[in-house]
Amino acid sequence: MSVSLLLHCILATNPWCDAVVSFDPGMGATPGYDNPSVVLGPPEQMSGEGTEWESVVSPFSPAWGPDEIVSIGLGGQLIIRFDEPVVDEPQNAYGIDLIIYGNPGFIDLAPPEGLCGGIFGGDGGTIEVSPDGIFWTEIPTVGADGG
Image (cartoon, rainbow, N blue to C red; front, side, top):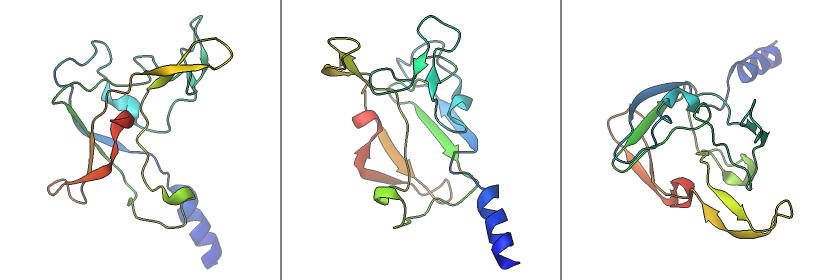
């Protein structure tokens, strides 16, 4: 019986953020990309659905639609909340406990060969975590979108 209960608890949780606490787009945020609720749930797997540019999300074709990503400009911030605790779990793959999905991509010099000619959209940013929304700690070894 305890195994069934444990299984139920695992199945009842998810690893995705559950709520937007606050959003300030900041200066220079891209107009039309201002819906912070797009960060809720799992990351995009297909981008541009219903357009001629529909494709699987990949390093050469990142998410790009206003219903898929939110733009945060200079001085802006997006604060999200998880219903489940985010903990340092050594058994996570490669020791990764928190992933922030962005939309930088590779410039393909020879489509569809995948010849990388640089990166676009890697504007950077700071990632901070808080157990209570009052005291914040910057994650100094990681930057948003490679920043």
